[in-house]
Image (tube, rainbow, N blue to C red; front, side, top):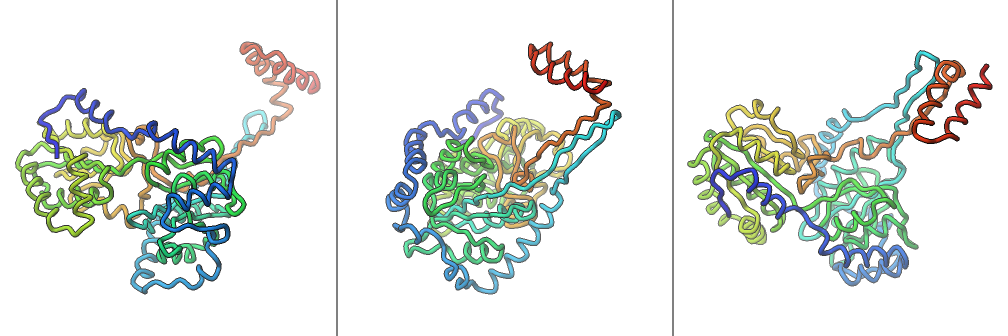
Length: 429
């Protein structure tokens, strides 16, 4: 793990640029997959499923049958835990539901925007080394609150040709019946363009690996997406009152996700930095495989500890990183909150482990990465809604303001625009 002592902003910028998620090296390979599925549909999809996934599937085998969905069984402990998970996410995300608005101006003209749900959405559920059933909840619940009529799930099958029973159970619990056994760039392309078996959707949400992210970028314009997510990130700002044991455990929790994940500690206390290093070594040795190897590789590649003079400097550095997850483990985290300009999700205080955010404390865990929190936000109900503008111009508006509108059109050089307004002005006299 790399340690920096009082780095300059320029040094931090260089680190961020180096680590920024780059898709360009893979783009040509992924582009050929996307275009092949777009052009050749089902034949190409089956080819790539056989080539890249754990189980080759043909046509109807790709679709989860009604019998598979109805027969799935999970233990009661999982059912109870997920009920509370769903309830917590529902309560938080219900606050974000936007309503249609309208107004009538002083001339009697009516203007409005109608809030409508997107008609069809696909949820991509990663199923590589782990199956992220939590992501299914995080995506499906706000989509249902928004009123999306058709919700689709795509998730890779296991070696036996079946999808994780946890995913299937949650699909049934959430009323999702259209489920496809597929993953990777070919799945994204199939969802965006459709095949003989797979029906196209209007938007795709949910994180995935680098190939999935690259494919999502390539289909933008033909299909909506939530974001282009890179490997997960955690940045911890901590002072001398933070417990090294807590800090290290949170860093390892993030590191076990992916060897390409980024974990960073910024502190103004040298003792905490040294104590965290000792705890990382100790707690790492206590992890079982494969988590230990993944976390160790992550720390070696992308682990970073930064010592600063003042805790305010730590927040400045955090703003340059614009991390996916930010933990403020300080005496008074609320005093730092207003200084934070960019982060996907912020956790305040020593007891607010990021892991709570993964499993239903409320806010969504589908978040911007790779500094994208500078201009984007985590998944909410708004991601499943669209706004349609409505206008009814009154005759009084035409009489009182028609000449003004026409003058603006001519200033932009659009004579026909001006005349389309003036013909109504003449007709209103």
